[in-house]
Amino acid sequence: MRKQLRLSGSGGQGVITAAIIFAEAAVAEGKEAVQSQSYGPEARGGASKSEVIIDDQPIYHPHVEVPDLVLAMTQKAADKYYADLNPEGVLVLDTDLVPEPPKFKNVIRIPITKLAVEEIGKSLFANIVALGALVRITGLVDFESIKKAVANRVPPHTVEQNMKALQVGWDAVPEQ
Image 1 (tube, rainbow, N blue to C red):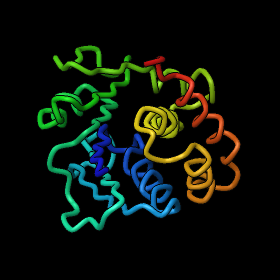
Image 2: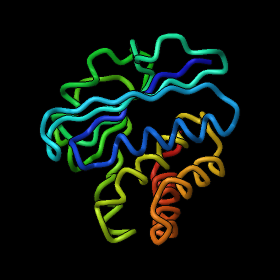
Image 3: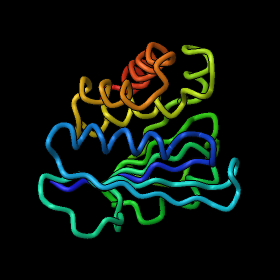
């Protein structure tokens, strides 16, 4: 059941936090999970990626080799991080921030940042909107588990907004 995910964007978009939360939700369900991250020398604006492996068996190699899903929150991230995506995998793109989607068979375009601004009021919540979408797309963790993991990770005064962001992301996934 091993699934390898790569969440990518630019520094400050929260893809590392989203990956940590995803991994925590999987562990809370009794699954094995590892999370790793890398980013450019710029604190904000540089390319960043975070990877998560989820399995029902022990994970001995903690780095994604062939991702089953790649989330790209910027054009630069899409161009840089999708090349080794499993040909049967899924490429999830932020519609407005990735105007030139890579040529790939399975692409899901969601206006992630636009939804965060319009529905929650701040682009700050784009990573949680994306997380809600990824949970629905992958089916790797239950929605209730991701809600608990988010609530445990975010500042207490933002829990309500983050719960709304999760739901907005979940609802934004087109019917398959």
